[in-house]
Amino acid sequence: MGNLTIGTLAKACGVGVETVRYYQRRGLLAEPPRPAGGVRRYDAVAAGRLRFIRRAQEIGFTLEEIRLLLRIGETPNCRGAREIAARKLAIVNSRISDLRRVQRALGSLISQCDTGGKRNCPIIESLAAGA
Image 1 (cartoon, helix red, strand yellow):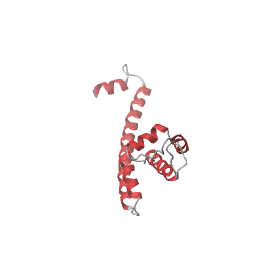
Image 2: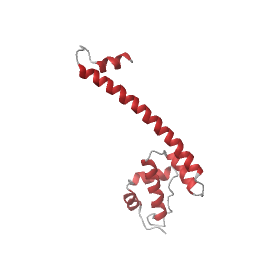
Image 3: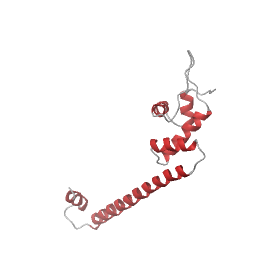
Image 4: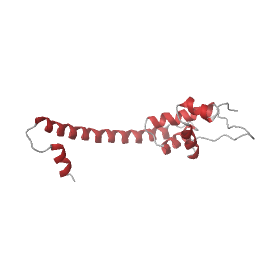
C-alpha cells in the first residue's frame, strides 16, 4: 500500500494539494480509499502518474489529451500517442506562424515610430484604423 499523504505527494511532484484534488475530480488520478479513521495514502504509481500529467501539461497537452495519452499508455500501442502528439505539433506550428506575423507587424510599427517625423503615433493610428 502507499505511504505518501496528499501533501507529501503534491510536494514530491511539484504541484499543489488542490491540483492533486482537481486531477482526481477530472478522473486523471485515482483517489485512494480512506482507511477507517485514517488518512488516504498514495503510492509510487500515483506519484508517477502525477508527474506524467504535470510533464504533459508543461509541453502543452490539454487535460483531455492527457487522458487519452494515459489510456494509450495502458496498452503497448504507440500509434495513438503519435497521432495526438502530431496534432499538437501542428497546433504549435500554427501558433508559431501567427506569433511571427505579430512579431513582424510590431517590428514594423516600432520602426515607424523610430523614424520620427510624424505628428501622430503610427502604433495608435494603426490600431485605430483596425477598429
